[in-house]
Image (tube, rainbow, N blue to C red; front, side, top):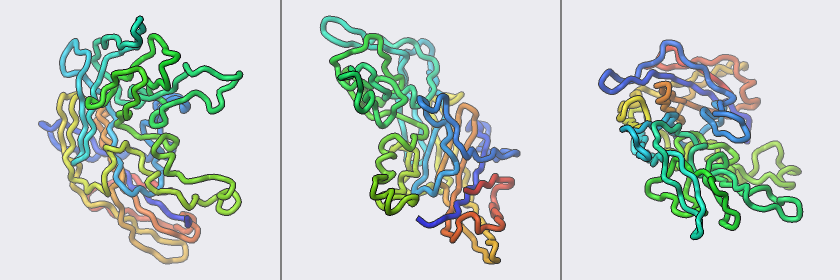
Length: 333
């Protein structure tokens, strides 16, 4: 892989309810979160915001940061949903439940009343099964875990060593609910996945002795650039969104139903002037859409790239051309 210049233009908007008006550009734009932001301990939590210094993406990532809210009082379960254009994620929200044990086997407790539930991977199916016994004083490959969501709850490798009072996930797929102790449904997520989770990690390529001796530090030959996309499968677009798609949020905002459209604006371009005097115009694509209904913010990330002999070190100046939006924040990696 040759050195590359990657340009990021990040635009932030305030989301307003549909009966008040459309989204509006924020007067003071929010800088890029280059290192990303986790919900908690890096060892056991998911990303709220992925590192925004990520490389070029082949598709638009669509993400919802929000909290599911019960539409009525005294509910023990309810559904919520998120849609941008044709891409939809639906979830069933449960109050806290645990596995109990009787003479027949494991059974679920009735869910408690639930008012709100953060839509984070920690509340979805996944996690680590610590009940697997260590053989000969050691566990060769560590405790088994759900590779698609190691930070979740409800994963059990087998039923030989059942854990009474083990929690069930609060977020499930309404079309594939858990029925048995060892069920392994697809985790339902609305946020960014981590690079060491499946299926992303399987796209990273092979880093073996052959790679170390013949190719390091370049990416392996079997590296798949889809690795850079971090949205869940259902919220990863096929190609790029254009920026005028309808957005619908159900039971996951301050209102039971929130609707608006992504801003219908032209993608910015970046005029790059090199230190050797040459210059060229780069068109960007909309590769990340983040709807944050906790803070009522919308973020659009426009990205572009170009091969350069010495990468970003060849760049002398940059100018962003954004005819429809003023004061956008520019970050380069």
